[in-house]
Length: 308
Image (cartoon, rainbow, N blue to C red; front, top):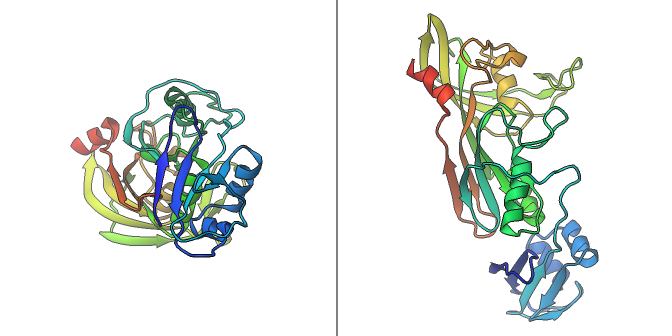
């Protein structure tokens, strides 16, 4: 499969090009092979997209010939309801026509919520896309809790979001975090496999429970140390699943809650948020298939505790 992408000022529609590889294959089957979802095809048909073969509009029952040039124009996207365009500072680590990787500060939501309806990453990305003239809304691929800092990935288009979702289910998106936890974690390396579900008494809180969803976290000890006589451990974590509050719940379950994480038993004496940072993000690019690898250093509040 080969594809190329074009965006020009006259037509702001996201466009992909493919070369047909099988004689007599129906366009519909080729599109499925190129991982264009049924939902996307419906949108193309009814919301202003376009399918062409060698520059001529065709429907999905068109039989292809080897070497035919297929162009898929996706319809322009509408902004999500309730997502206000705002302009603010974004720390861009990686960007191309398909993906945006950002370094999020602590105390900023990924998407707006009732408590924090504005100034989220998603609001600012809307403004950023607006400045770029992108006819696209915000598709968060990997999100972070409000108080967690570090790398997060956003798809610039619904089709890219779809491809990234497939990649995540296949385990092709890898995220590593660093955290500081209470106590000295005994094992240098361990794998926590414990299902996570919602706590009956709370809307926000999660817990390890038998009827929860499968959750898997690897924990590596980087350093055991103490601050003012209190034992702490600096750890690195690899997420194999992406459950809500997964690291925070798993570490609390181990008896080593994150410092600053008062929801799960941590103390706020040293830091005013859970000491958690996404340090690396590795993924296979949905279009080029190249590896995209991004890293981010710890924020000052965590670094200062380690320097102590």
